[in-house]
Image 1 (cartoon, rainbow, N blue to C red):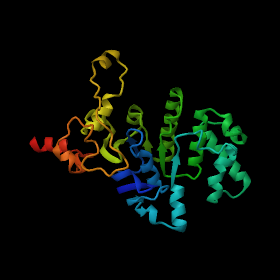
Image 2: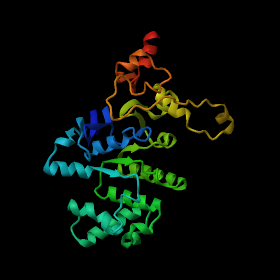
Image 3: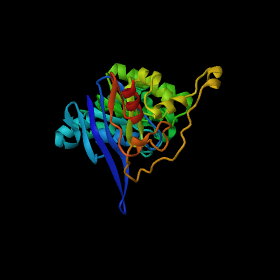
Image 4: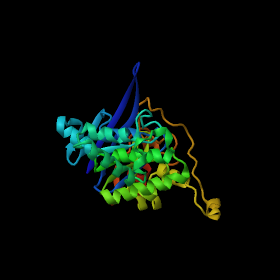
Length: 321
């Protein structure tokens, strides 16, 4: 459904300073699946998601949706793709206009795209959307400040569903919510995916939650894709040293097992996003760094069916075996 090839995004800060946010990322998202995208804050996850939707114009590379290059589309073709691709934002407090009622918030995309014949039909559709996400239709005349964080996120989800999209980017949709509410929102998204046959790009930094919701998972570091694999494969057999370190930090419920686990502490400095990377971006923190890491960028390879990674140490290990 979605194909991303060599996506790059550089932000011009002025005074000849540039932030290299996304550096040559490539991946596919298949119809009906959830692709999880994880990494530390500032690694380029959200920029990647917004570029996939066309909210950011890529500096280089290509994003296609059902075979169409979304950044070259004009007019009606572009409007149709905008209907088919929607976003659920991270912060339900900031993403909803506080001066607009819930009715107006959900009605706005319907009005922009002319998807209602009359006021009665619009009201019925908004009521149906609210009930679909677990809210009362009577909430339509209330305002965002009257709701809890979880309820606001449900309103944001209803708004994203209004145009009946096929593909949704969920940009850390639970990170701003109380832990007790997070599971409810995730279960709602999973139910909607099954009922509406949706495809998701699920962006998060909570690796345990991503494992639960994703069919495949991609790991980003400083704008680069470090590893991509089926969810079970990635969590049981991580290949990249960065992925291994991230997974070692996930707590386990059993205190006995937790006590004997070895958490990998990454030492060294983070490279600056203001400077182009020479060699591997992870070299300053990698416990397996070798001379090639300082001079040559690692090649993105398929090391097992559907399991991709970019790592010199991994290539050298496979060459020896």
